[in-house]
Image (cartoon, rainbow, N blue to C red; front, side, top):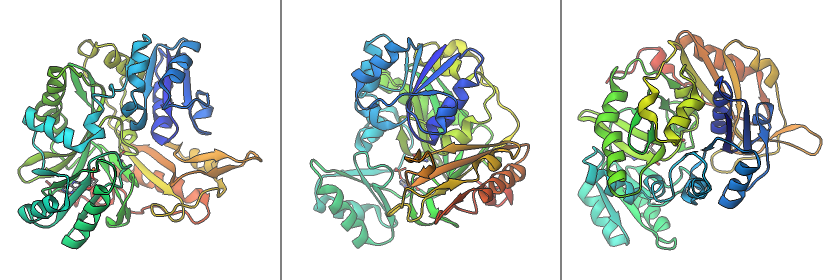
Length: 424
Ligand code: AMP
Ligand code: GLY
């Protein structure tokens, strides 16, 4: 099998590695890829928002499967173009990717499918926002309706701040905001893979969204993750399929826009059961790779089965008993104003630690061939170990060997879980 993976971050680096490890796979092509991916896949500099260019690349290399990593090409309809050109694609159509692309659409589908989620008001002007804030009370949750790269959501006790954020979102063309009930409880990510009809769920992971230790500071794309979650209900993934993913997939099917791809269910485990915080149409970064790092079933065959409507025949997923921890190394100034172009060293020494894989999130080679930072999140250090403490210490040993001037990382990824402080 030949597989084309679209994207250039740590998620795609993890996908490329997992796909390449499948014995059925003889070649992986990545567009555009990154210097880390280049060690495993043939990287081709194609604009992944250009569906025709991607389909031409798939044709040139005669690939058997296209895997779309990030949300932007999905929302732009790249999966539709590749599917029309005859390629099996893991990634929803533009219409189905609206589950991620529009929070108000996701809310409407959840309501129709009776999926448990936060109460919400969709607002198009400030007066509506004010009455929604007053109806729901503090803490206030205000979300930009459209894609905002993880920066569209504000959770605050301050009514003034909530209003200012809403005002900024509303000032965009056709701007809409969703004002939501605050969900209390630990957050969990469950990645559900669907062929449009059937669903399988990966094991839950936990993501660390705030930039600072102790969940302080602004939201980010994710500063670390781990899986499995020993403190969560053992049947959580099954519950998520039964109460959330399957009803959502059925509703999308009923509407004539079947969802083929990864339904990323972001949950809060509240006192009244799991409730959806958000849907995404792709794997998470870094929570996605923390989740599938321990999967023993052949990954490319799983994604191919989903892309070809044959998930039912795939059988139950097999998992190792290991634990996975990811620690993200971010640029100086991330998330507000990341500084890029700083040289990175120590990767080879880090990768020699047993169980460690260093995934490239935002790197490039400069004119002299030196590896430098090229984004806010620069590296995802993934470690797999026989227990959480071993995985954690391997990840942090690797982080300590990596040099990137001004960089920062959280020191408490998976710490409370290791100490047994989490209960639901
Ligand atoms: P989202 O982009 O919808 O995932 O929101 C980003 C982050 O904001 C989430 O990971 C949560 O930490 C927080 N958040 C979003 N919605 C809620 C909610 N209804 N209640 C509590 N926290 C929320
Ligand atoms: N880690 C959160 C995300 O990928 O959206």
